[in-house]
Length: 264
Image 1: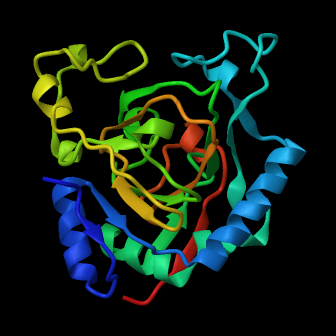
Image 2: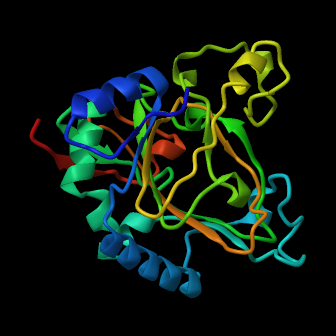
């Protein structure tokens, strides 16, 4: 069964029910074309500036990445961090009422905080120097009082398995796995007996510019390299209930969150 997509966003209860069941939903055409164009244009400007904080493919060292910054492609940007405060166009999207209303429904709260310490990024997949991101949950390195966080992934162009589009394992946000089902970096081992049946359920949806994927921080997701000739760009922010505090001293607490109150 395919990940449930919505093109009518008025039935928030249906969206919330699908999200609770699968840990992921797709909102088709959620962001209008003019807004996507403005976000993408500023994103391209920010990439040209190459201002920190940013992360290079070579720094992370995932499969397929350049081995070092000195190699060909070693300066390839994997993601620009700190997007919410780089330009008002990004903050406007992050705090857009239609986005926050849905996030609030999924989290069951009226006080919402965007974490600046995680995601808060422009993600790129370059044709020649992108890497494989193996099956993982974001909560492997996020530290909050509760694991309930929601990420909003905005496609700034076409996304598919061919250009490294995200894949998800629906329902995996509710699954439990033994410790030996993970490698030393907490990636799920797809051949582990406890993981095989789950990985077989994986789906790699095709997205168009303006589509938004909402996914639970506990939902397993992965992405391959970009085998096309065009770079893929996506903007991702993550949110939590404002009373779901990051653990003191953790990376999750390293930057202040940005909070909003919404009407429910």
